[in-house]
Structure formats: C-alpha cells, structure tokens
Length: 441
Image 1 (cartoon, helix red, strand yellow):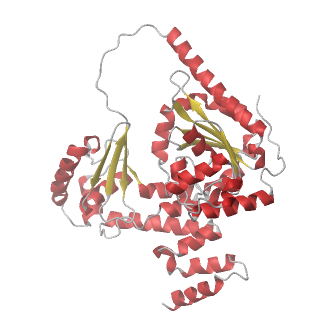
Image 2 (cartoon, helix red, strand yellow):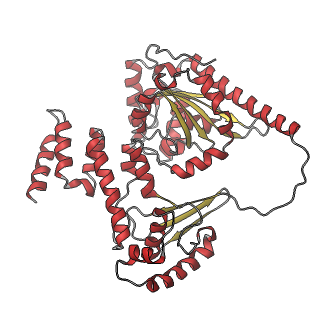
Image 3 (cartoon, one colour):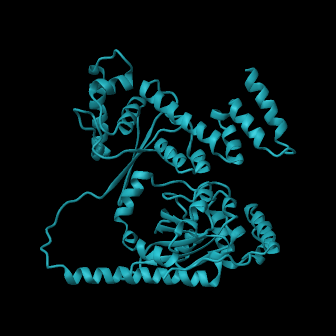
C-alpha cells in the first residue's frame, strides 16, 4: 500500500524562517558564537558548522560525479536496484507523476542514482542540481536530508531555510540511510523531497519504515538465493575491477585523463595532440579510419603517416598508467567508453538542469586546439549552451551566462535578460550599456 501525500500547514512558519535565515547569514560570516545560532536546531547547527568548516559553497550547485553512461552502468550493479519496486510501492501513489513529491535514492557516498515522482517538481529541482548522478553528500552541498542522514547514520528532516545551500531553501526533505542487513554497512539513502508535507512526523516514520522494509527484502532475497543455489566449486580468477574513465577538456589546453576503479585512481596530463586524438575517439565511439582520424586531428590533405607515430606515442603513455584505454586499430577506437566533461554538460542541458550545466561549463573545449574536429565539437557545445540559455533558462541563470566570456558580448542574450528583468531592477542600466557596446562593436 502506498502513501497519499496531502499538503499540511507550513512546517516552518514565517517568523521561524526569518530567524533561521539570519542565523544562516551569521554562520556564513563565521560568527559561530552569535546568539541567533542557538535558536537553530542543534542537529542543523552542527551540520552547518561542518559545512562551513569544510568550505562548502552556499550557492553552488552540486557537481555531477556520474555522467549518463557511468550512471546507467552503476545502477545495474548497485544493491538497491533490486528493491526499487518496493520503494516506489511504499512511497509513491499509483499515479506518481503528479504526487507533489519526489523520491531520490542515493549511494553510500551521497550520489543520487534514481529520482522519481512528480514531473513538474523534477523540472523545478533540476535547476538546483537535484539530478541523477549529482553528489549530494554533506561535504559537497552542505546540510540536506540525504547528505546529513548519511553523515549521521540516522534519519533526518531538513525544513526549507535549514538547508545550508540557499538554492535548496524552497524545499524540504526527509531521508533515512539503508544498511546492509548482514554487515550493517550503509548501502545508500532514501529521500523524499517536496513541500512541508514531507517533513511531518508521519513522513519520517514512513521513510524509516521503507528503509527497514528494503533491508528485510535484501536479506530474504539473499537467504533464498543461498538455499536455492547448488554448491559451486570456486576457481580463483584474476578479474579487473570495473573502471570509469573521464577526459576533462573544458577550459584546458592540456586535457586531464582520469581513470577510477573501486580501488584506485590514475591521472594523466595529456599533450595537446594526444588530447585531440582521445577526444575524437570519445566523440566517435564507433571508431574512425586512419584517414578520417588524421583529417579530424591534423586537417585535410595530411597523410595518415603523420598520425601513426603519434598513435604509437599515445599507446605508450596509456600502457604505463591506463592499459584498459589503449586504442584499438582498424578502425581506431577505444576498447571502453570514455566520458568527457563536455558530454556531461550536454547531458545536463538535455535534462533541463541549466544552472548545473552552466556551473559545469568551465570554458571552451581545448581552447587553443586548432584541430578541425576539436573546433567543430567546441562550436557544437557552445551553440547548445547558448540555445538552452536563450530558449529555456531562468533569469538568474541567463544573467550568470551573460557574465562568462561566451555571453558577455552577446547582444541577443543581453536583450533577453533586459526583457525578463523587473521594470525597476537596478541591473537594467548596466544591461542597457552592455547592449549598446555589443551592438556598436
């Protein structure tokens, strides 16, 4: 049987909200002894202090740690994947798209793996970075129900302005950790997010009960599997842990290649040429002939003989630190998926998470590279970002875009921002001046 969510009276009255907001400002200013902080719940106050001491940004969206492909692969192997139907059945009514709440399931590190529920709410929360793959641990985004529940190992409710990050102040949430039924190690976290209805005592009891039901189901499934499975002869085998590789190319002339497994992480700073080659192989995952890869990296009318020595050098670099990424030939292609931070930005734009995408966009793709393929990909990402800003972004995100090099002299962007500004906004005069400079230049 699933719960029916009903909106209750405001869980954080106006007077209390103002007190908490003022106390929050004192915390951010480092005034830890201010008397107003004593009016904040001890659990919240302690979490704020951990966040402040950890230099967590109070208005920065969380980083997306898992791109689309890595997220999908990780979901398949995560223990909570097997109990998602149970979670949905207990927390979401039959028509989950208009419930008025969201459920989020995260791993033990605070990375959100599944977000389901009210579609309209998903559209609104995407902009603050509440998206699958994002890191909502307390040391990444500050005080929230999922992150603080994991930090404390117990269920937690956070109401509106109690969140450390101002972007989350319109929302409330309740979360509880899920533990391995045998080892008691934390496997992940279950969170419900919405309005005041999700921080009632009944909501906390429901989330706690759901976590316990999930743990019971995991245990029963294991016991049945042991009972039904015939004895097996175990043969020791040397298997390689699953590996994820990411190429960081935004705002960097020397790309950074990161390969991370469950046990270790390797990092390589690549030359400009090697960066261009790997980026092209990441973009063209089906593979490229020597002639086509040479054209994308060096330009037309260049013999593939120019490319081959560089490929030999690249293979030697990878063989030492990341042998799993050594390119195959005929055609040239990578033996495993290689994500890029540029593709992550595109994925965020596709999901409507414009604020997070803009934060993740750290500059043009390999800005100094003159490889034709890199230039084309650079322009594609720029165009996608600009189109999303012009067609879908909120005013504050559009203004933030207008402050980065890509948007500073863009008259269309500045004009749209001017149209969206309130008539008496003090920002209008500055925008008018910037528009005049952009159009005259």
